[in-house]
Length: 443
Image (cartoon, rainbow, N blue to C red; front, side):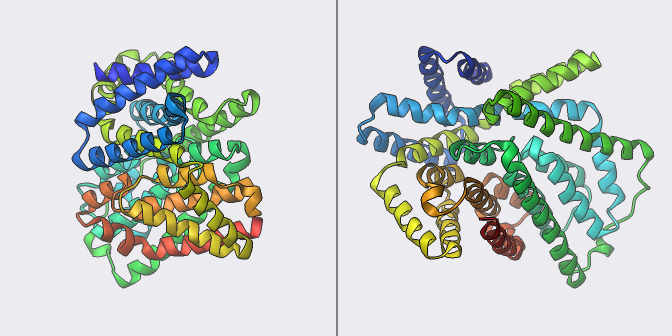
């Protein structure tokens, strides 16, 4: 029943986006509050506690600003697109799974088991391709394929984090990109080449560092060879690449002609692509079971995410214009006038400090995106967006409380600090320095 409630909220939000009825917005906000409260009872202990603290703080701060119910309503409505994105995006995994792409990915990785460097490249490359569409589900799927291999903990930590964190910087199906571009008023078309370029660079650096690490820690004896990759699987992999390219291109085309919000476009694609697959393949019977699984398992399991996203979003919105936020923006503005490098390092340090104690990136980065004015900093909107998304990506990998770090540390069997800082600290440090240098160059 709760799944229908959450899905209904998402559908009503999409309807409200096009019809723009004030009373419907209030209905959607009311439903979002009920969804938050319902998730609070089902969420894990830490996300529940953190979510309640952030939501309470956000509501109190917004109320004390004098905006009243309208301000709180605006804050909740602002984060609703990301909740809808989070809820609907997993639908895209249905046509991918039914088309047999996952079987081909498993076959490819088994084929590379006796070659550690190629296996690492296969894992990170597959995540680079799948994570933009499937989010954390891509890591879970890959781990199912590799569970029998029993990869060394360090290799799991390095490959999963490096491959996944690239998507945080460019995929419109991620809350990070959608949120930052929305707040800074940047089109996805104008940003994608910068974001994807930095992501590919991160992937290349990660593979080079792993090759150097593997020379000192040989893994070939621990991995066993498998049969060569069949032609059918190679064809499926090519189709998968084409699918992702067409999906992203479609988002760009729709944005270019309609000027709709990219978040709304992505939500619509998440619904239309599975529906189109069912019509074209005439596979509605085969889709029945995955759709039921989505309704009965996937949506109800989003309690932690709904708690954290809504509360962090409300807190970020409430912080805008407060004396604390103004003080931070003034401090950062002074640094920017002195040195871009000092400004960029300060932004990273602030976000990493906040997220390392458990506060979600939406609160930290969202507050900065809403508060900072690129023109006053002497920066372009694209440059600030790149910096914030680079920082988001790094904090997602480093913070022991991020969903990615928690999942990978569980799969690798090591602590969150070991997963983030020890296994990937060098890679993230190099990417931070390279990213800052590139942003400084394009400014």
